[in-house]
Image (cartoon, rainbow over all chains, first blue to last red; front, side, top):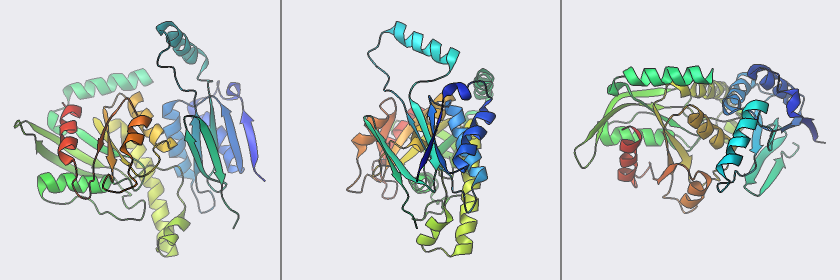
Length: 124
Length: 209
């Protein structure tokens, strides 16, 4: 059985970067797949990889990570781009969602702009 | 914090001697970073820099080759320090190394060193002046590791060129990489066979100008 845990953005928005990452990793280490509303900052994604690597053991082999983000309109007018940039700065980036799961459960996440496929590990 | 980092970077770049430029080779494991480092060093210094292998995470420590000088057809010179970094991954399983024929104690040791290597690579991001992201052109480029590496370089305002490596292989798909990262220069190369290296060096001149 695979368990997903939905994490609304408001649950992490007041946390520091370190606390955000620790909260998400704690869920993953309970063998659950996190479905986070929105996305982490770019630097936080790198920090997530760094902290994951610090915690890798023979049992915990790391994570699979994927950010599903709506394709930004290249044709959008300047005003709507500014509006969305302003809202992201003010409220955090709540668009799209982020999947983070234990590497022992998720084999790979394949995505192209139009679909996402999550492959699970075969039981040994 | 981000503003402070950008500010610090701006001033350190302003006062850094051109001979101190650091060119980083970044990417996922087995993309060919060390093969490219060896190609650059063989072409311009006449000696190799790093050991290479088909087993992922062969490079587990940062390797630096100082003062590489390359020249273009117009006689212009470019000098930089080349930094070959361990591949960045989100998971490391020692059992994968066993499957590649490494015995268990060495596989566990390799896995431990590989995790430290990933951490080092990420920590060194801030030290780089420019980066070549080395991707295996035969593999789907839409991986989160690739996106995170390139996104972090962009967030730090570090100039990037993408080397789509292994174009000598039939499965290589240069257009797929160009489509995945349309805002970046992508050069198709074969670091192993030295294919298209002249175009690659021309891109380095643009990157490090």
